[in-house]
Length: 265
Image 1 (tube, rainbow, N blue to C red):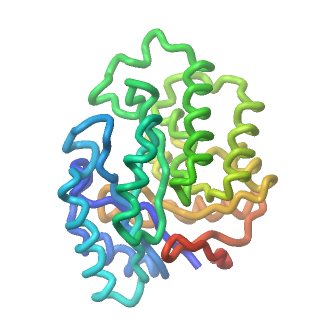
Image 2: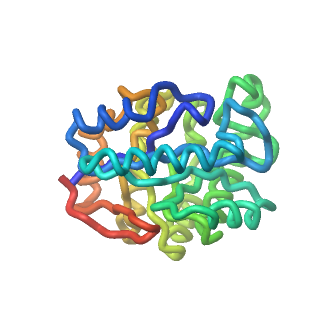
Image 3: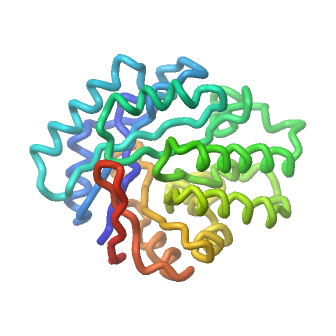
């Protein structure tokens, strides 16, 4: 079985295409299950090009529900991708509790006031930063995300590598601590193919991290991080090869925030 649980919509302000176009691509690629997983409203910054506004969230849910009624295959799940921002945990919990999501992704896109994955906003903010410290700050936030109890899946968990700006520092102990935290929190890790379309040219997370996940029995699922209909299921052949190479035979699926493991196609 193959699923794509990371599909965005134009509501986030930086994706294009109608929602049904994404579904049609999933049909063409014979995916058994797909999940819309757009950016939840944020509390730390208001920018219509980063995430949907609070008054758009009900519309998003309504549109996904309508597509669920229209299509029996692929099965369509209602997900949401929410930024972990320290100090806003309870705000986010109240927001998520308003809707019956099938799963919630946790993502780290910001370190304090630095949105490191967006060179549109911060084109020069890598200058003068030290690689090891940035990685420590980032992965400590991933650990806190996992422990927060807010999320079912950690999305693109080594996103800090996106722009391939630094030589990867030696952080073996930090990575193991992060995977341990995820395992102890019983949170899933996404194998996200969008890194292959970014300067890092590598799936999120790296093979090194996935091997740690396998060692600690952390479940995994699949996502394309599609921001255009053509990206649905993109490079899943490479993702499946990677997942199998490190020893996985199953992936996680979700309904009503309950996880079920299924055999990997």
